[in-house]
Length: 237
Ligand SMILES: [Ca+2]
Ligand SMILES: [Ca+2]
Ligand SMILES: [Ca+2]
Ligand SMILES: [Ca+2]
Image (cartoon, rainbow, N blue to C red):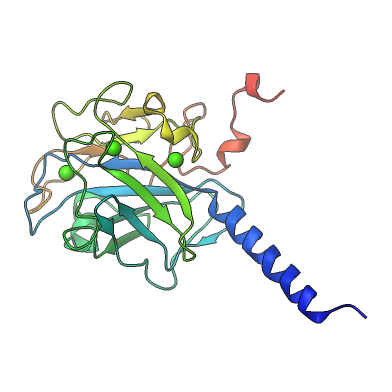
């Protein structure tokens, strides 16, 4: 007779595999680390966009963002990314409503405490090889995606603060976003980027495409169909 414990182990291993596989589809796609708007506490107008490049919804409740300084509090319960959905994470010191007043509607925004002192402290305006090593970790502590971004070649520079950096939409994967040459600086009216509306905290002109991934070859917004259907013809063979 088959050992029931073996069945349990098999199911457990399979569910870990499925979770890991699903998690691998979540990719950091845009980073606003050097906004022109207020950055002195208590205001911190930075944000990060993450994107589900897979076919299935992924529940990210309990996940954390961290860097070499520390970790945010976990993503609250009930937060899930549909296939092709991009969502924005902002520091706990910022209100979701304030963010929306500046950047608009139509996508999920999560405000995470610990995205400032006491946790990962925020995103330095002078990233380097040894700082700003962003990690997205799942509930098991596995690193789903890591980006050690920088502001020198091959990464886009950040002279003139305000524009975010974003991952080219034909390079959306947890591997491709490790390379600076796959990132671009946001320019208004290009690849879905807009300028924010001026508000109390978002008080200068910043440029980005929060919650939007625009397919470069079709111009289609928010990544439906998913990028794997959108590969240029020369990659299909
Ligand atoms: Ca900053
Ligand atoms: Ca770095
Ligand atoms: Ca990565
Ligand atoms: Ca975007």
